[in-house]
Amino acid sequence: MKKIMCMLTLLSLMASFCACTFSQADTVSFYYPRADFLYDEPDGVIASEERDAAGHTADMQYLLSLYLMGPLKQELVCAFPKSTRLLSDSRDGSRMLIELSDTSESLTDAEFSLGCACLALTCIKASGAEEIVITSGSRTLTIREDALLLYEQPFPTASETEETK
Image 1 (tube, rainbow, N blue to C red):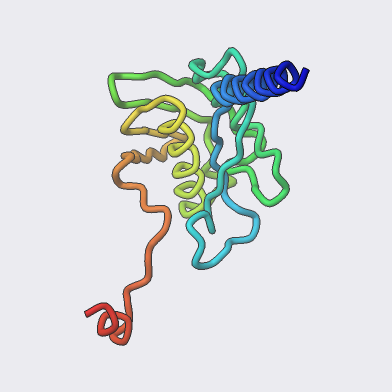
Image 2: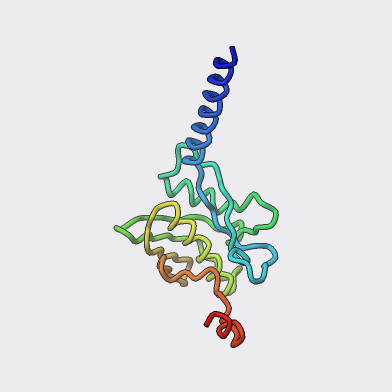
């Protein structure tokens, strides 16, 4: 009887492990700015949240529309105004082109850049594209995966470099 109970327990653990593995394949990471920046943290300005995209993980138009609705977490804020709409998206090899409605009246250049960095990071992770070109009105920003620096390590002080020698 103990052997049967052990086998059933093992089987149920394996089944729950498999269920977790399959459900993770249907999630997408959306990146948004933090409402309050955290200093000296790797995700102090831009943080991610996992969103369920079951059946739509390869549908970028769906994912981008869902992204523009904003985050679910209270500590994150929408990267673009609620009125922002996706006008078009296309893919040309490793480059993804995204056209949004005009945000020039509601976002400063710095806010637009931060929003584009969040959107580009989301698209890079979801689609595997290496370069994201985002156009909104007269503004266009191109972001390459290898150019995104999300956390800058501070330079070591003189005493820290002496300690490592």
